[in-house]
Image (tube, rainbow, N blue to C red; front, top):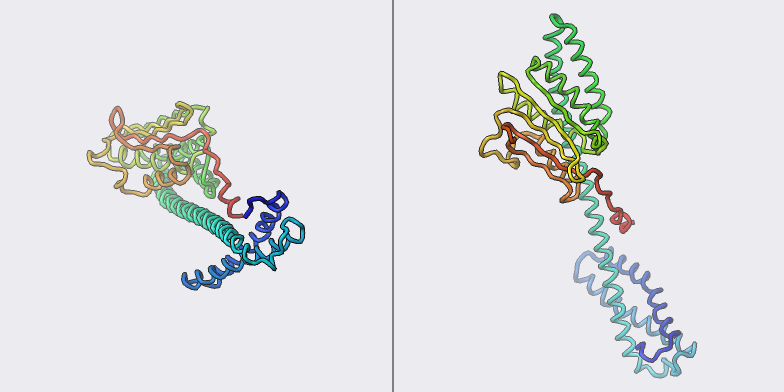
Length: 331
């Protein structure tokens, strides 16, 4: 029906549809609220689908006649209005379909945000569970060692108390944080290792090799501690001669490469990460999966080159910024 129309006539047509679009959206919302079953909803939409094109034709044809765009009186020649009605019906369906698609898209984004929020809460719960599992056990081990040393080795007992106090202070300082710098995590591990070395009567050798240019990199809180605990429990504690644990971090190809290794007996031949017992390994992988986009991180556990077990983590130097288009689209 736009063929042969002047630009002014075309402007009238689309201006009217622009004015009708919010009204169509509001009526659609009302119908979705009023009718929950498909059959009554479709019947209501069918009635509205006839009403809006008829209203549009009546208003547009009258305006064009009054403004001189059309020379014929629409109220005296109703026949030509049928083609106009068919065209208006098609435009109405396009507008309604676009609005419906936009609503479903926004609903999809809202569901994604709710799912992401739920996953974050689950991870926070598991992190708290991990803290509650680690801290009491560490506290009990430390107090047991202090009790054994307090009478015969008071200086050693005082040293253990100092390390324990620093460890608990750092733990409290980061309890509400999802991320810490690699330097902060290493500072935590230094006190943890000091307590473990006293617990093992200095049978535990520790090598920390962290390059200064990666100490600022943000990593998930308590990312390395569960890996270190596994290395001590499964690689060192079972040996009467003790052993060595190495924690290293360096910049490799624009990323930070972290390695936690021990010189213990290594992993069983049929060992698989998916079936590994314990909470720490599973939570480590799930937190990396949730906090970094796919392809930006790597976590692997296997046999070390010189024996023992080795856990490697590769992370970007700077985590990708989260896009805000989800929130903008829903607002």
